[in-house]
Amino acid sequence: MVDIEAKNLSRTFEYYRKQRGLSGWLKFLFYREKLHAEAVKDISFSIDSGELVGFLGPNGAGKTTTLKMLSGILHPTSGQVKVLGHIPAQREKEYQKKFALIMGQKNQLVQDLPAMETFIVNKEIYEIPDQEFEENLDELANIFDIHNILDIQVRKLSLGQRMRCELVAALLHKPKILFLDEPTIGLDVVAQKNIRDFIKKYNQEKKTTIILTSHYMEDIRELCQRVIIINLGKIIYDGKLDDLIRKYAPYKLLKVIFNGNGVKLEEVEKFGEIDEFHPYACTIKTKRNEAKDTAIALLSSDLPVDDIIIDEVDVNDVIRQVFNS
Ligand SMILES: Nc1ncnc2c1ncn2[C@@H]1O[C@H](COP(=O)(O)OP(=O)(O)OP(=O)(O)O)[C@@H](O)[C@H]1O
Ligand SMILES: [Mg+2]
Image (cartoon, rainbow, N blue to C red; front, side, top):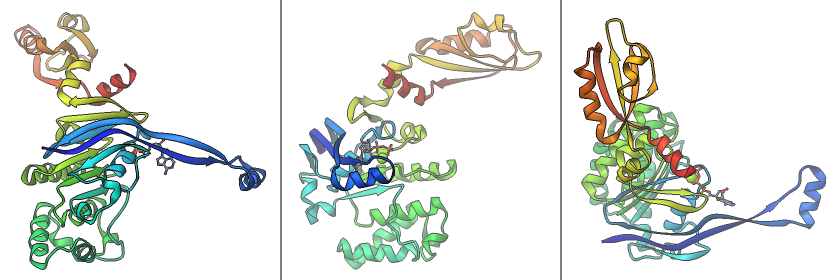
């Protein structure tokens, strides 16, 4: 079943340019030069129920603008979008109850109050019946492990704890669709991993449809099978992450550790292109389908091989190649 259908969606922003200094301000009062920024240009995509799709793209690519159109915060300049049969910009109450937009850079929780207070406000906003509220909260508090921080003033929580509470606040009304805009921004690697695990668990248990934007490749690699890559407001790739990697990174990396006296460059060169060399650790680039054979050849050679790791090329490098192609 298709949950989200966007057709030829565009959004242009109008803004005014002001020249520098006082005279610039004076001119600005009387004459303003109107400029247009095409944040999203004619994009079309459809997302099935239960999919977890990654939105990728550099700063200013149009990701947040797209998510805002999908949640009805922004009207499209042209094109259509339907989410669960609703036109988001109409802001129907029924639709508000079916989705959640979570932005890592903005808080919904009131800083001076415990998270519980915001949860209660949301209960009223989304008209969640008492029993359902209690059940949902209990379940979410378990998933996100926040039972013992519910009554602490939000400003006293760590960033990771706050983000977990933000997610719970946004999920209390059991949205069918989640728009997650950089949910792991600014978190340390451990907290990032936690949030990722929670998102994964939530998507698997609840079969929620999720669109996720992140600049952290680990998030994308661990969570999304499908990615949509946006650049300058246009979609430049929509498909499986695996296919993208296969197409743009036909190589794998063999990280080989040596012991004893180590090795010389000439001794390893014959096994493939050398990416990095050190007498005790070197990285060899091999064709995808030759990685295993090369590893076996290394192990059965006279070289003092201690360990071999077969690794994928860094996804960041792959994405960079997509932008350059
Ligand atoms: N309210 C606005 N007025 C004018 N221009 C805007 C407005 N909001 C966004 N833009 C412009 O639209 C473009 C897309 O912005 P958007 O926030 O969607 O990018 P993004 O992909 O989310 O980037 P980031 O990764 O930095 O969050 C940018 O060029 C931005 O400057
Ligand atoms: Mg953004």
